[in-house]
Each structure stands twice: as structure tokens, then as C-alpha cells.
Length: 141
Image 1 (cartoon, rainbow, N blue to C red):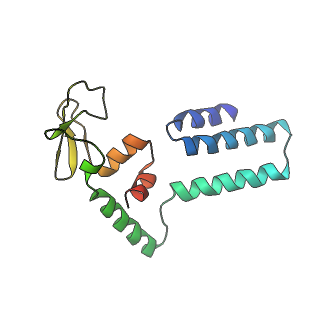
Image 2 (tube, helix red, strand yellow; image 1 turned 135 degrees about the vertical axis):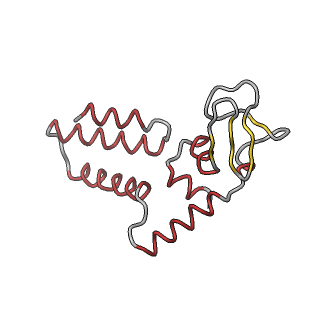
């Protein structure tokens, strides 16, 4: 179980908040396996899991789904030029090591002519900040 938790921790190193939460989960799981379990550890673990579930889980009922779709549409309309500085209509690509600007913008989307990556403002926000899709959507509101 500890190797599985270490793998999860490694996959979330780009996002410090989630990384810190996963460290708490890993440490608490280690205490559970070693028999050094206390009630306050369980409370702390439940709190962290609840926070992560709130961040990572989309809405469940129909009204919330419609609200979520509205939020995604609004986030996609966020000007990508406010997230990346373009000079003469081009910028260095975020998705590969780019020495010469090869990424352009059109219709509020970015396209790299070197690597071929297409993305919208949500993709750019995720790449710049290391956020998950849902965190990026909420950040672009």
C-alpha cells in the first residue's frame, strides 16, 4: 500500500496543495499499517479526503451539471492572451522546450506550429499553474 501511495504522491508533485494532502494521506496510511493509529489521525485524514473530493469531483445533479457546463463555457471564453504574452502574434510553446516562438493564437485557442499542440484557455491555465481541469475552470471564472 505504501508504494501505491508513493506513486500517487509522485504524480501530484506539480500541484503543491494536492501534494501536501497526499503526504498526509500517505503518512496516515503508514500509521494505520504500523498499528500507531489515533483518533485525531482519522479526523485529519477524513478532512483531507473531503477537501480533495470537493476539488476533484464534478457536480452530480442536473442543475449543478448545467451550472458546471456554464462555468466550463465561461472559462473557455477567457482570453488566452491574458494568460500568455504574445509578441507580434506569437509566443514560445508551453508544451515543449521552445527557443524560438512557434505558438500562435486564433479564435481564443493556441496552436504550436512546431509540436502541433492545440489548446484553449483551460489547457493553458492547467499547463501554467499545474492545476487539474476543474481547478483551472474555477480559476478562470
